Image 1: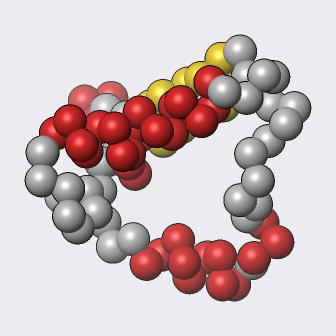
Image 2 (image 1 turned 90 degrees about the horizontal axis):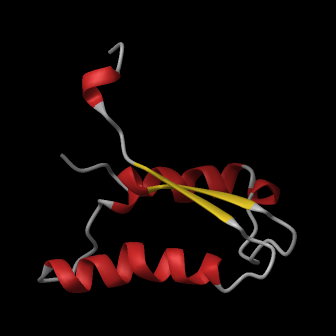
Amino acid sequence: MTVDRSWMEIYKGVCPDAYDTAMPTDAGTVFIDLQLKLQCPDGIEDWQKFYECLVGRTISRFLECPSVHTIIASYDDYTNSPM
């Protein structure tokens, strides 16, 4: 299953002030929705590159932020979903 990634660009176009590309400087806890990260971009041919590009790089960026002490990484778990 994949999700059309254009929805994020549409949201950013409608409400650009709700998004910031700067890393938060005072966040103690960070939530990462890794389900969205499972959408593989073109050009990635193996699992190691996939992980490094989409998961490892994201987590590493937050670990470099001095205020972050907790990272919550989440995947959807359909066994516990009411849908």
